[in-house]
Length: 313
Image (cartoon, rainbow, N blue to C red; front, side, top):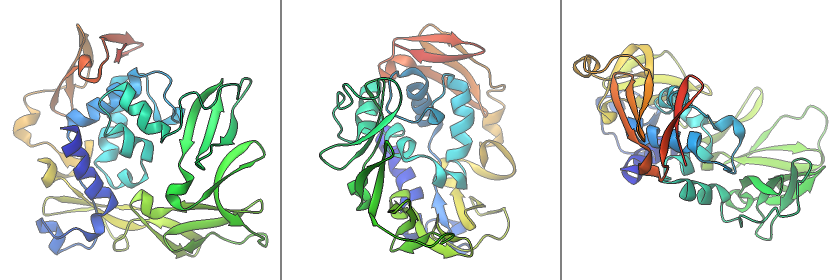
């Protein structure tokens, strides 16, 4: 289930603008496309983000509450904003089936003990032998960026490991530029870059300089076209393919963005309070039944955290 559902996200986000037309919306809209993941896969993501310890990932991505995580990621991954979701979530969180596999993916090939003796009193950057930029904190790997993947080099600047293309000299106020698929900017004598293609987007230069944007038409209005919800991200239209996720497009925002479950399903499960029953998270979310067994991701129990719940070792 995880692999199959991720494939739909990869097509929807990474190469959406080049897939062949498959729904009624395709004939009427030239837009990048997002295919929402099934709720079971978002539940697996949230079990891992809330229950796994010591993950080398930004704290802003994490949540210690299973339900709060669902409320954050279910609508985001079912909306144009899916293009802005961290690669750590899109590539690792939505593929992983255990804390071990999630941790291995986030490390990007870096050895778990790479930060031994580093960052004892605070975060510090380093480059490993393969050119990856690593953040060390309390002698553990806190974050990794794979610079060679974007054709970049790792450099340590003022204690921070950054991915750069080359050295540069720039006049004050010069705006970011596109270099092929990369958004580039001169920052303190080094060319910092973001490879938009890795994010499933293209680099485009506008009045404010370069930016990563979905490949599609300029934004017009939010609307439903066939089975798709049309919205905007970074000034470009994005079609969220509700139909492929067995949902319909609705005018109002809900737990899955503007994609909504059929009315016949909504009556079967109401409310959004989750609870622990043994080692299982149970309840309703967006009209769908949640019945998540913590053991499915190698976690042993369900526990209460404040007003929420989570799976735990």
